[in-house]
Structures are given as C-alpha cells and as structure tokens.
Image 1 (cartoon, protein in one colour):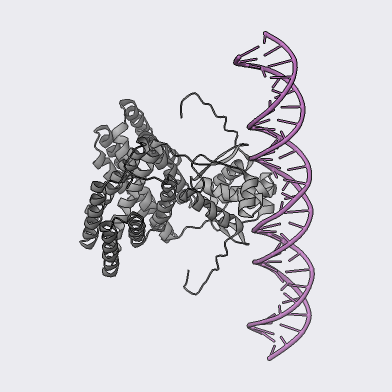
Image 2 (tube, rainbow over the protein chains, first blue to last red; image 1 turned 90 degrees about the horizontal axis):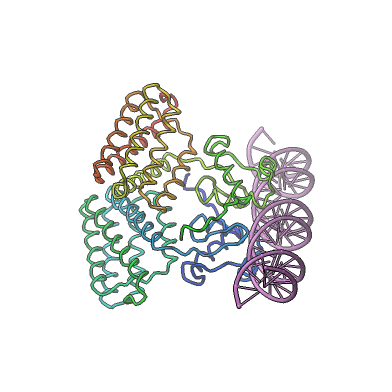
Length: 226
Length: 226
DNA sequence: GCTTGGCATATTGTATACAAAATGCAAGTG
DNA sequence: CACTTGCATTTTGTATACAATATGCCAAGC
C-alpha cells in the first residue's frame, strides 16, 4: 500500500448501525441480557431490518451479542467465568504488547507516555476518576500502538470492548488506586529501560489485579465504589 | 449455566453458509484475493442473498473476508506482516494455554497426549505428512481444551482459521520436522512435570519456528515442500 | 388448581423487488 | 493514439413482502 491512496471510508449502513449499537452496549444504553427487538431497533436507528441484521452478525462475532435461532438477539451477559477468562487473555495480550513495544519504542514515545503519566497522576491527586480512566485507557492504547502488531491491536480492542460491556465498576478503593498508579510508573520505567521481561511481568500483574477487582465487585453488591 | 439444558443448535441458513464458505476458504476452494460474486455464490450454495450477506459479515469479522463498500467481498490475502503479527499473537495465546493447562491437567489428559504423541511419531517415521499435520492439530487443540479458558479457545480458533487460510506449505525440511517432533515430546514432558514456565517457553519457541518457516516459504517460490 | 392443547398474535427468517453505485465499453476529443 | 466522457450493464445496497417459528392467552380436561 503506497501513501498516495485515500480510501474514503464511507461506512455502510450496517457498519454505522453496528457502531451505534456497540456504543449503546458499552455505555450501558442497552443492558446486559436485554432482548433486542428488530422492528423497534429499526425505528430507533432509522434503518430497515436487512442492514440491522447484518450489524447483529458483526456484533455477535465480536461477542457483544448472542443470537438464538428464531429467538432473536440479546446483549451478552458475561458470567464470572467469562470475566476471569477474558482478563487472563487480556493479560497475555498486554504482556505481548509490552515485549513488542520494548523493541520498537522511540524516545519520543517515552516522552509522550511520561506526559500522559503526569496527567494521570494529576487526575489521581484530584480524585478525578473519569479523567483517570480516560487517560489510563489512552496509555494502554498507546502501548499497543507502539507494539506495532495489527493483529494484536485488533484482538485487544475486540476483547476490551467485550469486557467493557460489563460496565464494571471495580471496587477501586484508595489503596488499589494508589497501587495502580504506581504500577503505571514502573511500566514506563521498564519501557524506558527497554526491559521487555519486566514490562511484560508488570502488565500481567496489573491486569491480574484488575481481574481480581472486577470479579470481587461482581460478587459483592456492596463493593466500594469510588 | 446448569447442566440440565439441552439447546438444540439448529444452525440457521447464514451460519450454514458461513461454515461452508469458511471451509472453502481454508481448504483452498476459494483462493486468497478471490472476488466473491453474490449472485453466483447464491446459486452455488442454494441460498438467497440475504443470508449470504449475513454470512459475509460473520466471516469478515473473523478476518477471513474483507468487504469493500459497494465493491463486494473478497477472500483475505495476508501480507507477510499479517503473518508475522498473527503468529506472534498465536505464540502468546499458546503460551498462555500452556500455563493454564499445567494448573488443570489430569493424569488421564497426559496419558491421552502421550498416545497422540506416539501416533504423531509413527506418522513422522513413515513420512506421512497429512497424518502428522492432523495429529499435530489435535494435540494443540487438546492443550487448549485442557487450559479450560473459553475466551482463549475462541480467540485461538479464530486466529488459527485465518492463518490456515494461507494454505501455507511451510518449507518443512527433514531437520525442521525432526525438531518439531522433538519439541512436542518436550512439551508433554513439561506438562507432565507441571512446569508451566517451561511449557510456555517451549510453545512460544515452537510457534516462532513455525512463523519463520511460513515466512520463509512466502518469500521463496522454490522453498522445499515435503 | 394445575396442566395441556390450540388458536391468535408477534417476531424472526428468507426471498425478492427496487434503488444506487460501480464497471466496462465504445464513441468522441485533444 | 492516448485520454476522457457518457451510456448500458452488472453488481451491490436497502427495503419490503411473504413464510416459518415462537410466544402468550384462553379454554378444556385431568
């Protein structure tokens, strides 16, 4: 592919519908387990059933929907086992991303990440959880971008979307939050030192901690929400 | 999910069409880069365009097809970069499978794997390459099953299908074949010893070797086919 | 009173008709 | 002669009509 092509990605109706539904599912507009009535959704999205059904197939392949023959589609409701399994795979993927990133990271990348880390620590100091989550996500995405593996990036984003469909509020108490921020600082240090094994290890531990927190909040109704 | 439900999986027309196309792509009935004419495929598969298009969406989500707006679908043609990236992710996934399998493997599992290993070595001695590939695949699938992570299994199978769509004939010469068989023996030993780190390491090396072989055969027209 | 059978309704599944876009070809122009 | 331009044809995109299946309700039987 040379740089002279500018493919206009006029997204088709099925893609647009899928994107809209994806957002609704991840942001909670459609609750886990919710049954999706085709005719009703057609009206809400302003498309006919054919493109909507193609969108369903796409989202089902991503694991955001389950389609039961002759009984329609519903938003996936992840079991604790699904969450455990999903985070285990995420940890392996992020670990790989760390190893690959070490081999390709530039000094500019590290400077960018340090700036993001500073923003994140500021959000942490100000107890600004939404900003923290936002920057956190950007940092992880950036790491994946540095890794430069398209298949990894695609797999990561798909699985991440599925886990986010939980709309989990992990029981992120103060101690865990402090811990997570510290881990991020170590990660950037490992990346700057080009220590792939250490970075992989940190990322896997980081994800395991998140896994434990999410699983705990799934079991505890009264989990501490911060 | 309790064990008392027996959902009859009457596969729908789109699913059946997708399965048929998947087989055609993986086994070479449809060559990489081939343009898929909807009307023609409808006749060949005996379905109308609506379910066929839903099948297209499913396969595109699996990465077996690419769909260009207003220009139809075509079988994916993987670049060397895609292959490199794909095998890197596969290695990470198999490594995880090894680590997880160690924690759950039973003595029966190990006995089964040893029997498969013996079959594989017999195929190797008889230079029966198809049988070798078949048993090899069964062993890797079995390892994933023992790992008991549904998300991992799903991700693994999808990516595996995409890589198999290459219909690669790696330049598997005698030395590499001997090496691969020996590696398999070591893997089973590591599993029997419940040594997760060693098994992970072996699996990753094993996949890296395969990656190199496939990449080499992509570059060399005259690669040694055995 | 609870279950079962059958009917009416609603919903999903598939085929097809129509619309929009791309493709290929031929004629015209510099 | 190469390049463009316009038209006919093909192909894809979307909506809708019809078919098949599931769902819910009510009545009848045990």
